Image (tube, rainbow, N blue to C red):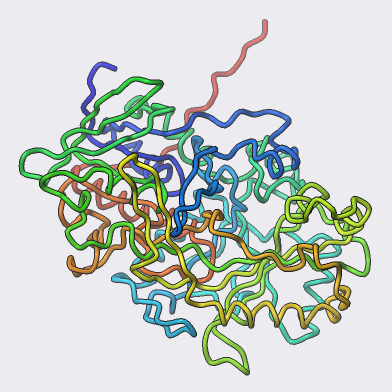
Length: 531
């Protein structure tokens, strides 16, 4: 590299960092993107459920420690594109009321320092960028929007269409999930998605999933001013003598230390790792961790209260692309509940290996085969509430410790009961199935896919680490752009909000850099002339 100084350094390539790189790339400013992992290998094992779920082929292999000091393996992947390489690409906007203070069974979900209206234009841009398919007006909790979905909804396959109809017969208002996917059902030649059953939790061999690598990092790298360095783990951020400016970004790469500097440094490592990096960057000027005079860095960790529910259909479920249907009738409560319960959506279609991952060793293979052929897979989400004792810390060796307790279990219990009570009307067996089954499996601490809240933003520097532009109160050139900034978690998938906020912060940075970024259209491939 000709120079190790850049206009902007972005640490991380996921929903936050990857999207921000895409926004800033056309500006002409020198941008360095640092990714802890490498490119995810494209190989047949990408779609092998035994390799992905049972052998955990793509997990980082690192150990974190729970509140009792017990080690666990987080479901964390480090590749270009971050965890979006494996996400289900369900790209919801937060509900308008999610930005306000909301009372829950377990406490209060705090208000955001910005409104839905402030983020709405960026939600629309993020939906365009990430190829979101949906149908406005179906979801009873959907907030207002300035434009329709950029692409039509992904159609239901026959068994899921029947499920949709059965939900309607019971008085519910099911809707098509907002899915980020490169799919054109009117012209199969026009999209990369092959509409398979290897979408949710798998990397995509065809680049059909709208992940941050495919949609943002790859086109950003077409600009000569953008440099990506892989296998580059940032160990610490160091400030100048004043403590107000980051002067050195210290990286370990393939056994060697490298140092970079930038006018602006953006941390986008994910809620747990972003907090850990700031805490590891403690110094004389920042004894409690970088940008942590408020003592909130690492605190208020949230990850949703999630459960996977396997319903056993009375008829075989031959669905391939199952992740098309959602139900939000219980989002804000029900006739017997004045307080919010949560959200229901479809999971990707399970198979024998996926079910085996949740069943003990003695579960008979024949039963697993029957279950996989008849399974209808649901994902239930209840809002997780912030608490200062739910926190990320690091020890002297730099190990991540994650202390977590759940404060909002009652609505999740009620939401599970609501779905289980519908099994008969939905064409599923009402009788109990063996106790070893995965009929109702709570997602454990290691399930960090929806992590958020550890470096919250706000107007009051005494109770937040970041200002409303996601700049650190204490450090003038430090920004955090991932789900760390969330003051509350809502009960819908956080990815689109991280993407929209990255675009919002990107516009702020362009103004700060006195730069412009026109919409980037890649140059056409040169024409091949055959004589």
